[in-house]
Length: 99
Image 1 (spheres, rainbow, N blue to C red):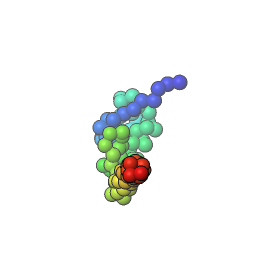
Image 2 (cartoon, rainbow, N blue to C red):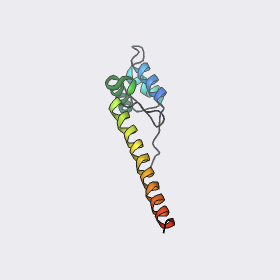
Image 3 (spheres, one colour):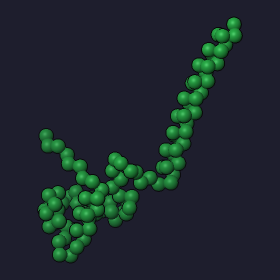
Image 4 (cartoon, one colour):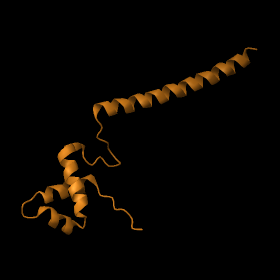
């Protein structure tokens, strides 16, 4: 089984830019960069549909405001749950101490 190649967002954006050059075109760009034509077509489509949000990768994420709010609320909920567990344990500890 061959290992799947991972390309950076910068590489993908540059490939899309090159493919849009009339002198190069999609087929030649894919061949010159050593990528499949279908992959380049997917990148072009993603760039057209998503613009700057295309190719978020594993590093920075380009989330919508709603997704950012959900992420923030989930983090906050996790903190509140941890604090509640700490308070439960402290309550149990002090209840034993007062006996």
